[in-house]
Amino acid sequence: MTKQTAPSPNFFREVIAELKKVSWPTRQEATRLTMIIIAATLISGMAIGLLDYLLAQTLSAIV
Image (cartoon, rainbow, N blue to C red; front, side, top):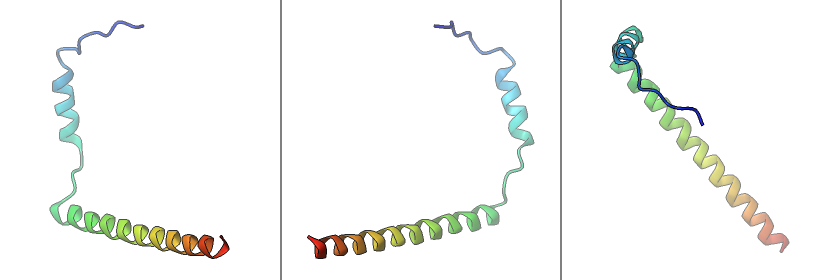
């Protein structure tokens, strides 16, 4: 196994410097994207549920 070394003293300063460079979304963008994710998740869940129901009905009719 390789020996792990302690992070360099500048590591956390470098992390903070990189985080300051990040282009963070505005509150409106974050809210809009969150709503899109929630809607896509609900639609996907309903589609999978419907497919599961239809397959269960088909298999029960066969058996």
